[in-house]
Amino acid sequence: ATRVRRLRKGLAEVMSLAALSRLNDGQLFAKLDERVNLKRVYKQAEFIARMLTVSTFIDDALRMVLEFYSQKVTMEILGFSEEMSAPLLLISILVQTAGAFSVIAYVRPGAGCILLLCWCVWHPVMYQQLKNAEFVVETLSIMGGLLILLAHLSHARVSRSRLIGEADSDEVKRVEQRAKQLGLLGRTLLVALILYSGWRRGHRFMSNRVFSRLEIAVWAARAADGVLGLVLLAVCALVVLGMRSRFCALVMAAANFISNMFLHPFWIYMFSDSYYKFPEVMESLDDERMQNYPMTSELYASHQRYFFFQSMSYTGALLLLVVHGPGQYSIDEPDRIELASLTSKGRD
Image (cartoon, rainbow, N blue to C red; front, side, top):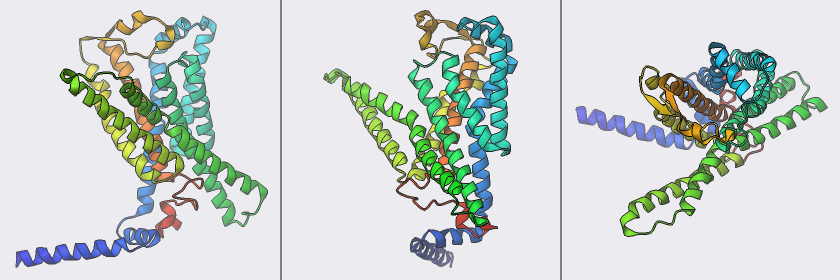
């Protein structure tokens, strides 16, 4: 009797899956909406994405407050006068705090995004990191997430205008066109970090000249690295074109989150008594001694924490693409599909 019940249950599951496979997007989301409040899921996912995206700005502002004197000394080392260092730090704290609060609390989030975008442009200049390619592409990728959020806000403004009968006005058409452009630009910048990583892997493989039998394992590892680089480049192309971009962004966000937990566990070094080598984050200073400079565990943990939250912000930027979609300048969603708009609960 138990086996018969299990068989019937298995057949019922197979039949239900077969039935779901024949449904279109609207019918599928309607079925899901009967069991799950998709509007609540949408809001929670959007909040998590926004929170992660601004996490690096919150961490940086908090670091400046708690380490104000050392940050001031760093500014003076970088060439800023003593009179300018303190005001610049105060402005940096204010801009990042105000921008992050606006995005998280959803209080004038558009203005918050613009503040954070301005900070992203100024940040590499202030710390003289324009020659640090990885630093720059990480910043560009986070800017891509903020632009996707701006595109969503513009689309929401257009939707509200249509509800009150102003869909044909020139202002609404201009905002809608700007939203499409912001979505495309955001997707393009979002993949900057992945594109850079894929290029580096491919470059390492192409520059490899090891073919001896004794080092065949090294060559195989290089080949695998090159293949992974090609895969990353293909994923970047899909995201930019807006083809399976939600799925690609979700996979990249999960991979980035997991790798970040292993690569930058700053909490491990906080209570250590060991010394570590200075990470390669000050290439623009052209001081090779800094690369082997012994660091205390506290200083090393501080740098690892910076990398951790920088990577978390990139994860949040990818999730913003998952939540809001690629926009109308895309292959998959030329008519723009919102998770919440596909459900009855999303329209209440």
